[in-house]
Length: 135
Image (cartoon, rainbow, N blue to C red; front, side, top):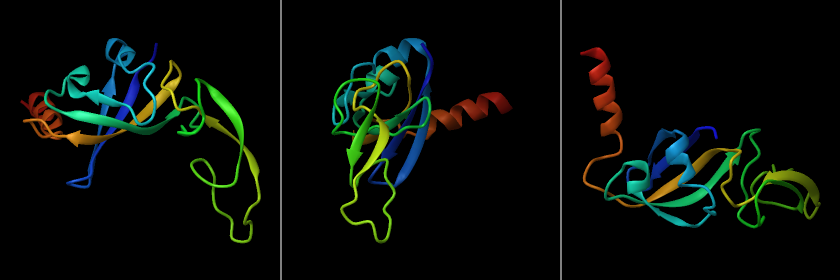
């Protein structure tokens, strides 16, 4: 099992923070779908509550909420995640590869939104690590 990069975005402050989860911590995220809520204790962030908003697999294919199951699938889509809008291509359906809505072993990045904040701010743990390296 590989590590998962988790991008935590706080809509109140408009800032995002990245956290890397190793093997044991990343196992706790397996099976979660886009839209699921998760407690911050699973990522050592006490008091926080997060919602999974998306992500991508090891090859960079984005996760889509409307694609069920695990793995990568080819879908026929007109708009949405994984497609670029063309000027004169209204209503044109394009077959694209996207990742499904469930987190599995080959998921490389997971995006999460902060629903409830804890006592310690998100950026504080990184500042403490930098101070330990300097001192």
